[in-house]
Amino acid sequence: MTDAAAYRPLLFSIAYGMTGSVGDAEDLVQDAFVGLTRAHRAGTTINDLKAYLTTSVTRLGINHLGSARVRRETYVGEWLPEPVVVSADRPGPAEYVELADSLSMAFLVLLEALSPVERAVFMLREAFGWGYPDVAGAVGKSEANCRQIFARARKRIAAGRQPADIAPPPARRAEGDELARKFFEAADGGDLDALLGMLAPDVVFHGDGGGKAQAIGKSLTDPQRIARLLIAGFHRIRLLGVSARPAWINGRPGAVMYDAEERVASVIELDMAHGVVQAVHSVSNPDKLDHLGPVSDVARLPKK
Image 1: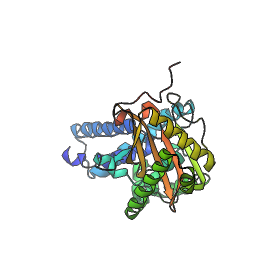
Image 2 (image 1 turned 120 degrees about the vertical axis):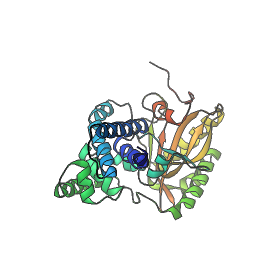
Image 3 (image 1 turned 45 degrees about the vertical axis):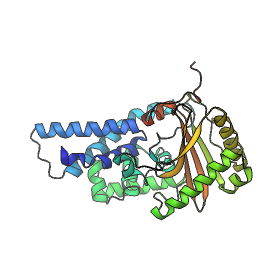
Image 4 (image 1 turned 90 degrees about the vertical axis):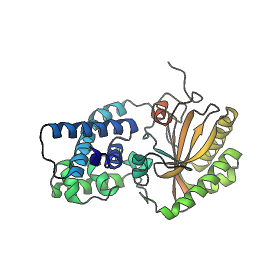
C-alpha cells in the first residue's frame, strides 16, 4: 500500500473535482483504497496501479454524483464548492497542493451543468490534461465516444462563463498576492474608488450560506453594489472582531476570515484576469468550513 499512497494527492484531486466537497473526496479516496485491498486479497493481478486507482475513484465519483444532484436540487441559495485552502505563509496537505491551480471555484461551478460522465471526461481532459486513451479507461467508454462527450461538454460549458485561465502561470502568483492585498485593504478601509478600480466591469459576486449563515440570496453583477456590499461587510465583521488572513483558495488568491477566538467565519476567493477581479466567491456555510477547523457562529443564522 506504500506505493499506492503516493497517488493519494492525485486521487483526492480527481475526487474533489468530481464532487466539489473535501469530505466527500476524502471518503471516495478511502473507498478506492478499500477496493484495492479487497482486490489484493482476492488475488487480482494489477498491472498498472495508477490506472487502477484513478479509474476506481473516477467511477466512484460518477456514482456519487447521482445522490449529490438530488441534494443540490433542494439546496438553499447559491451552491459553491467547499473551499480548499492553502495558507499564504505555509503549504497545506499534499493533496491540496496537487489540485491548487487546476480546480478553481468558477471552474467547478461550471462543471455543475454537466452530467456525471460529461463532468469526468471534461475535467480529466481540461484540468488534468489527460489523453483520450487514459480518459476512456477511467470512465469506461471508447476513445471516440469520449471525444464526442468532451465536445458536447465544452459546448455546454461555453454557454456559461468559461474562465480564461484554468491554471494561471506561477509567475502570476506574486501579482495575485499583491492585488488581493490591495483589494482587502480597500474593502476593510472603506475605499470605494480603489475597490471599484480593481473590479472588472462584468464582475460577479457569488455567496453560499446554505441557508445556515448570512449570505446574499443570488449573485450580484453590478460593480457599485458589489463594492458597497464588500465595504459594509468588512465594516460589520471588524466590529465583531473578525479579521482577514491571506490564503490561496482553490489555486486563487483570497482570504480566510477568523473571529476573535480563532474560529473560521468565512472564506473568500478572488478570480482574477488582466489585473482585475472577475469574480468573488464567498463561502459562509458552516458545513463547508468545518474541515478547516472550529467554525465561528458570527454569521450563523438562528435555527428554525
